[in-house]
Image 1 (cartoon, rainbow over the protein chains, first blue to last red):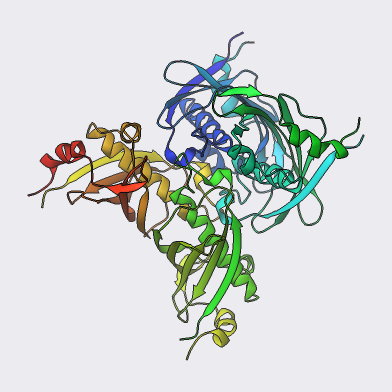
Image 2 (tube, each protein chain N blue to C red):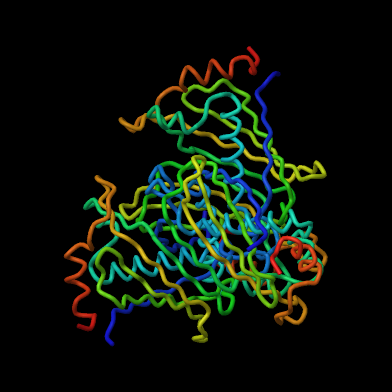
Length: 138
Length: 138
Length: 138
Length: 138
């Protein structure tokens, strides 16, 4: 199977840590956000432009598994994948690795497309499909 | 089926919102944390005491579904449930409702018990089991 | 000198802590926000209503002094004071105390009033002045 | 006057915004943290190493002025300056600019050096002074 994949790095800061000395479990959502926004940017489809065109992408579902803690000052690689052609929804898959390549965390975030005027769900913009097409299997 | 349930309220503040005017999707983890900590406190088993006794509870898994947005200044009811007798893991279930009783969000968070000295998993403390016992079905 | 004062409590959660075991220095702004919003609510002047009337209050300046750390699970008293009659600006003063009454932190936050349509500064709403009047010295 | 200066960039993400469409006023502390940590790293003096050597740097004071809002997806330049030779305290000065070079925010953060064993204040480590020396005026 062929699918779209993009990598971006993130350095864990003090703000991210908690008193266990780990990145707080609620902060992974921020890394997923950064991962998918940079993935879209790399496709020439910045999320900000999407909102300016009147479509926003609220999150519908998130699943995350904390395998090993991310720690202060570590540089985390956020690997973002899109495996299915988006329709009413788009699913992003995430793998987070530390500098030694150890897998720390996996995640899955489903977003929907919403027309900001009508506040109703819409299909994925044609432009996004066109840009994703070459990276996805038939 | 009988199970343990506890409710706590939380007012959405500006810090929680994002530019959609919704509570940011990453902030629900904070509400889940508050919900389960207050649930444990209501059982006479404060999480802080647990850490002082040398056991911590890192999160292993989180699943969350965003049904409707939580908005600024809304008072959210966090309903926390424990449905199974914990062993190596404990699972908390969450339902978040706004003031009109509308269900906004559901979540499921699995934590493990870890001995802070050895950094190895342990079973749920006997005291927690004793305190939960009366609220759980056989 | 007579001035307006209001108290509200806040329990430090895991999300607030950092790996020093302290509340992260950036999170005090959240407590100041909660303190001033509850202070306004106690005056019968909820901030949400203000925004609905077309006026928002962005922050212009913040000063904060970290005297002693706030720690996990402590219940912090946020004492919020308004000492001067607001005009183009309003200044809130904060004192944060732990359960033993020890002063942990002091803060000072200056906000301005902005008309959301024109995006220009305006004077404090008359209604706020009327409600504050009885608590302020001549 | 000669002083030490360092620049680092940061892209504002959705997690940083609030319902005004601005970066939340409490999140600037995170940018200051990133700015000073990268400034120290550029001096060959990573903060993480400092903590590993038994010295931590809690924040004593922060002052910040919000001149213009930072907005979603903007790339902010964090300019960090050290102007005085640190002794018991170190003061970092911050200027935040957007991509058009417009100054959005200024800040000043004072930190102290604390021996993590004794929990008592100590003087700035000699190594830091040596590394800063060439960049500071007599």
